[in-house]
Length: 176
Image (cartoon, rainbow, N blue to C red; front, side):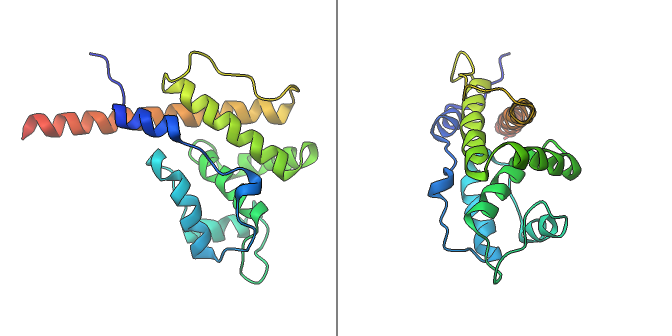
């Protein structure tokens, strides 16, 4: 038996794309709007979502800066998109360490856009839509190495969740 996600799931993964840094609105989202914006992008990945209380917790733990006039900026939203993926495979203190390393090495727009490219690239590879992981960028740093390993782990987790969803669906169809 070869278990694979459905063609619909593969089509969704093929089309999946995170907004690039300059595409994230910089008008300032309120807490509820920020959560909704992020979840709209993460919805195709099923088990990745963020709640308003999670966002507030990330601010309290200083993973993300405090909102200005209760509004979250483009940079804060970008960090929250990254955290939404990373938290599925890492504890918050490790995420904080990686963000600290990133801030010493790259600007937020460069780091976030790199994350988007790597995440989409690796996700398609893990789902069998690409034969190899395409190289992103030219330099290799500790931050990039760690980020790539986080993304590989998260992509495999997403894949496994899709397989288990397919198993449940198949089992349910057999019992009816």
